[in-house]
Image 1 (cartoon, rainbow, N blue to C red):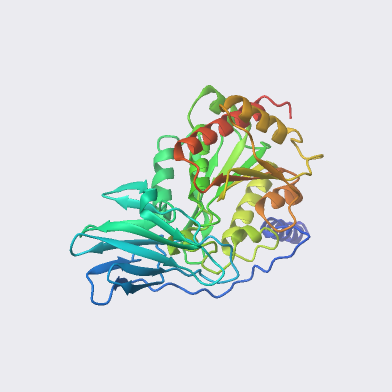
Image 2 (cartoon, one colour):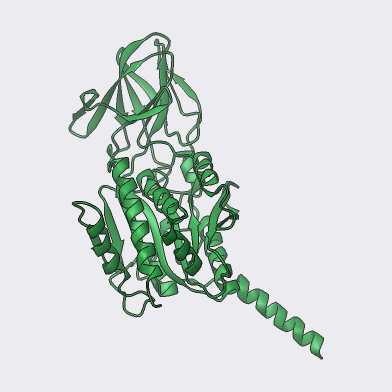
Length: 408
C-alpha cells in the first residue's frame, strides 16, 4: 500500500512544482503571438550612386534606402508590427567609395516620428552626432555625415547585442564563482539562451530573494547601463557587498528579450509581443520560463521575493512605483531608498511616479503575485553615461545598506 501512495504523492509534488500561478490585473492585455514584418537583411546601393547602407549585423534596423537627390537619401524605418509605442529605433552602416558629405532623411510610417538622437560609431568609437549636423523641419529629421570607404554605424542608441551583453557579464562574474553562478533558464522564441546570474553566499535556504531584470524592450540601452553599474556594485567584493550577499539571494536577468535586441525591434520580441505586458498569464516563452525558474528557486529554498527592480529607458529619469505598500515585506523601502539617493547624489532629486499597476507589467507582478516591492527603474534616453554610472552605483549601495541593516 505504501508504494502506490508514494507514487501518488510524487506525482502531486511534480505537478505542484511545474505549475506557475497566474496573476490578475485590472486591464487585460492580449499577449498571444502576433505576426511581425521581418526586415530583409541586405546591403543597399543608391541608384546611380556610390553610396551604400547595410543592416547586416545584430541590432540593425533599416527597412529601405532610397535616393531623394544626388546628395540625400531616405532612410526608411518601420516597426516590427503595430500597434506599438513610438520608440522608432534605427541602426545601419553606411559608406561611399569616394569621400563625400551626404544627407540622410529619416522616414517613418504615418503616426510615428523621430525619437533618438543619432549615435555614430566611427573607427570603433561611439559618439553622439554633432548638433550642427542635425536638421529638423517640423517632425522630419535629416542628418549630415562625411562618408568614406570605412563604414559608419548610425544608431538610435549604442548597440548592445546579445553577444555584447554576454561578453559583459562573462567578464563581470569571472573568478567570482563563490558568489555568483551563471545559468541558462530557457530558450527564447528563436532559440537563444536566456541567461540568469544566481547570486548569494552560504546556505540559500529561507533567504529572501531580490529579482533584477533588464532589456525587455530592445532599444532601452540607458536602463541596461544602470543595471550594469548596479550589478557591478553588488558584486564589488566590498564589506557591504559581502554582508548583503550573505543575507539575501539575488536573481539577475541581464537580457530578457535577446531576439528583439538582435532583430533590431522597436519594442517587441520575435513573436511580436511586448514582454512587459505578459506578466499575468505568460504567453511568451521568455516570461513563462523566467517565472518558472523563479518559482522553482522559491520552492526549492522555501523563500519569498521581497523586492523586484526592472530597468528600462524612457524620455527622462523616473522611478515608477506602486502606491500599495502596506503589508509588503518592506513597506518603507521605497521612501527610505529615495531619501538615501538624494542624500548621497549631489544635486539629485528623485522623480517618482507612483501608481498601482493596472496592466500586467513586472512591477505589478512583484506586488500582486508576491506581495513584494516592485519598481520600474527608468533612465532617460539622453542621460549621460557618467550620470547613469553614478546613479546606478549609489542606488545599489543604498539598497544594500537599507536591506542589510533591516530587522526583517
